[in-house]
Image (tube, rainbow, N blue to C red; front, side, top):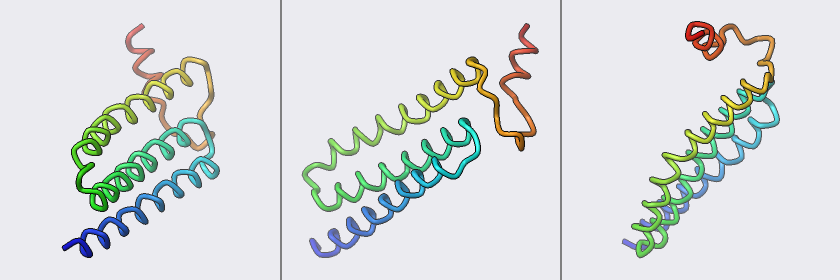
Length: 112
């Protein structure tokens, strides 16, 4: 049974590492601040969750603590990226020219 847990844990660690690498690549390739925030947040959240899950399979005694860390990450990463994007929007950082809609600006105009 331990051999199967080691294989599953290894696969999850490789998957998590791949998503973290793709998140880093997304930070380099995306055209503006907003898409970089999204690429970084989504990929690193999933990559970190997969990595922690892989560690939980390799070290079952740590599973409860790792589950609590994963839960904390699932709440804080998306929230922090939303706050960063809103702060960038309020600071006047322009989106990429390819951006077709700015819902936050539309909402702020409607509220005024």
